[in-house]
Length: 282
Ligand SMILES: Cc1cc2nc3c(=O)[nH]c(=O)nc-3n(C[C@H](O)[C@H](O)[C@H](O)COP(=O)(O)OP(=O)(O)OC[C@H]3O[C@@H](n4cnc5c(N)ncnc54)[C@H](O)[C@@H]3O)c2cc1C
Image (cartoon, rainbow, N blue to C red):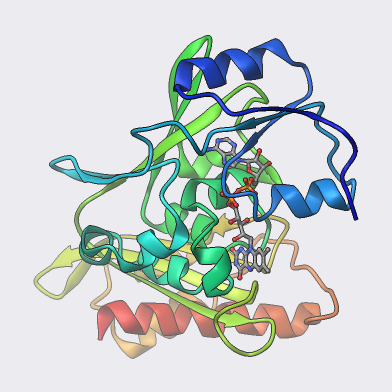
């Protein structure tokens, strides 16, 4: 199936790309194309202009920036999954990237594209939430930063304006994190039915800070704040982990579809929060 006709531009610089987005009232950024192209072929989106950012130099690096690491807009899932800085400082994101789709998609799609796409069941947005990532965004009007907690607005809806490009995400160093997932066909390399990313920090056997994120369960990837609150101040014992996991869907409208009932998904959310917490607190 072919998409409707559209104008295609492939700017060499970020400024040219931002100008192209600003010049059209129905433009879309094309990055790896792993979600945009299928949506266009299905005619679920019909941009009149596609702005291909894949030829812009300087956006494809994972960088150590002192107290945080940054991941540029054109970093592919496969690079995020295998990068040593990510493994050390953002373990959950590396694991989520490695569990995203199949190797062909991981070699083409980008971490920032997955975050910008904001699918309700995407892997890497949950890791970005748990890790307290910040999204750096640019448009012809300037730049701004959006906390991950404010970025995922609804199903396939982020806080990005139509003329904005997600230029990089930054992740603070510190703490430990993990990602655990049940894919739709039982394995990892498919959208999750339920998955959880967790981050904890602490010393002397006591947890001083935590974030717990869940994806595939509600209308968007979300922070399970009650789960995090339940583990903070504890020693991370089995009882504390079970108590935290029991709050994984508090306040969430759990979705039902061909892959799972409300009851099954609610159960899985708790199981996968528990497993991810066990990974970091073992
Ligand atoms: C067979 C298959 C299996 C998949 N399985 C999974 C899976 O298991 N888990 C999972 O999480 N995902 C999965 N996906 C989805 C896919 O991995 C991501 O959604 C995709 O890679 C997004 O990145 P991209 O660079 O390809 O973005 P594109 O497809 O180019 O763009 C996606 C959307 O984000 C916007 N966008 C992209 N980059 C930017 C940017 N830098 N700034 C602003 N807007 C931007 C585009 O305008 C578009 O709306 C699968 C996809 C396929 C085809």
